[in-house]
Length: 135
Length: 311
Ligand SMILES: Nc1nc2c(ncn2[C@@H]2O[C@H](COP(=O)(O)OP(=O)(O)OP(=O)(O)O)[C@@H](O)[C@H]2O)c(=O)[nH]1
Ligand SMILES: [Mg+2]
Image 1 (spheres, protein in one colour):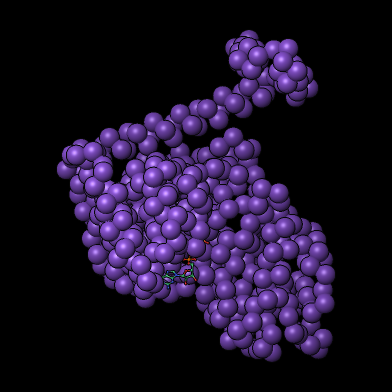
Image 2 (cartoon, rainbow over the protein chains, first blue to last red):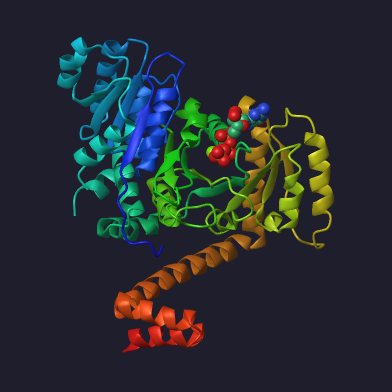
């Protein structure tokens, strides 16, 4: 109650699709937490509807999608659609995981501002979020 | 003001989400929203879920919400996880255990970071709960941080408090002795699929038998939250507690007590702000150092600060 008004950056880290491995997503979540963000982590095997609904309910500033299965061109457009359907049109989108260079333009056209591939320094992700979210 | 309140009143979930953020961030609009919405609150049955870390609070909260959905009721959930004291960041992971409700239109789940508050809740929890209540949910479930023994704040925020215990951990009875049992309206032994559940139930019964005669004995229930077992009985026990509050006059008393606590703690925060504003930081620091060096006693120093506000 004594704390002055504070705005925290809220980030949803989600893993769409069926791959059951979420080490990378957790590393990113922890880096953002250590960078001072409030990170909502929803676990593996999320459908596009679940991700969009969580983004809406949690009123996040940022949605980060992590994917390893190669299904990004199938799943990411559906996530973007579901977000739009719910009027969530002002979140910063980024993605990470195994994503071929060739797909970069397509993902950018979908609205993804950054793509982080394996080997990315997590500090770069934190910096990216702070640079792009206006307080 | 923008049209957010109007959209809120029409039942738009995105407007609810926005209102909560502004309330949580304690912005001027946030205060306005609380002012406008508070008169509409007080209808929901607010239920606190507290207990040790990993005791199954999130899973149980989800399973209880599912039971209410089966009964045709709507549910708002606020789940609090701790903020890091070092970075003020947080990982809010309670949703992971509530996936079955993810697409249910009758359920709204909001994760909150504790943002430095003690007692297992968040600084703005009462306002956020009031906003959810005003939105029209039949039940608002509040999951506290899974801490040790400092979860007592929840009793002032929820009408019914559920304390979650686990068999075989040994420290539960310890926690009971520390006085936490006074805040529990319902005791749950969760993870009843683990050995030792019945032993824990009898230990709790023995402990409750020591309570003063005439006082209400909280019921003890077994649940297996991962399988959704025991939730019909738990929802019934919650309803019984509410009926008890209403028939004993305890409801009005509890509401008055919660309101008193809330008003006084906000007033305290306002006064502290005024004290900070009335004394420049360097002066405060100098005063504090005089206390540290034993030149001045803390009471006299505090009197000086308070006097600066009155001037
Ligand atoms: N065997 C068994 N495991 C359970 C039961 N309920 C919950 N769990 C498991 O206990 C672990 C912790 O459950 P949560 O619901 O996250 O517990 P929590 O109290 O919310 O945890 P924190 O919020 O981190 O304090 C998970 O692995 C659950 O699957 C149960 O009834 N039986
Ligand atoms: Mg939890």
